[in-house]
Image (cartoon, rainbow, N blue to C red; front, side, top):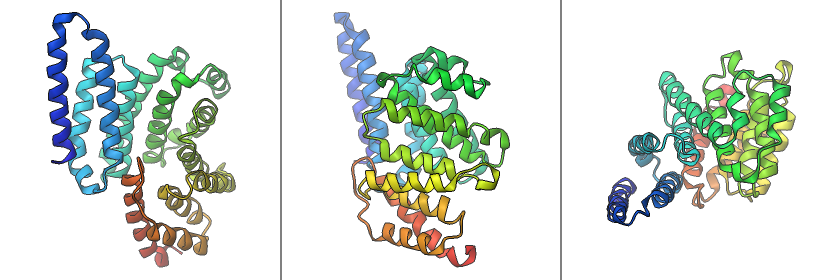
Length: 292
């Protein structure tokens, strides 16, 4: 039984349970809880999958299911955030066509913006806001907002990366960086390694001469590797791809990627990204002679 068939069975069981409780009048609270759990579990199942081809071929069914959950619960920040996270991940990892990646990450951005606005009213005014004014609004974010903030930041980063040739998109980099900095302050610390990887990417997207800060990016990558005890292989791949290639540091590039290929990719919530990281590491090493 694959994970998509299992999810369909679970969805049918959920429907039966909800239907049987309609008579009791207790369904309203349960629908919200079960639907949120289902949305979160779908995302978790994908991240724990060890066969990227299964995810590539089957994830669109998840995306459609999450779309249906959004249709049923259009104002629920957690469901919107779960949908945004999966759209952002699929759009940046599996969409090889630029136009498709643009569409998918744009949907992620829209879902996450709605989630952010519904969870935190000041965020409703973020679009077009001056950076200084935007920074002032971040202080009101609390730990209860962490999941929505994470999804919004991830979706924004995915959208920027797909549109990195557009200077209008690059202009949003400081906004996303400030949001991730605030996330590190309000979160419980479990995602800190991932956030430092994201910050490393943000700092290394453009050279120092154009306003980037690759050395600060390197510090974030190194901290991410330290915090994950080396288990998050994507941190090393991003370190090699975003920093070492940008500054033409071949020795660092090859060392990081060979460490990735030698590692065990199996780890809770990291398995899929680790296997994909190993695939990317192999491709980067194969093209290194031409690049350097």
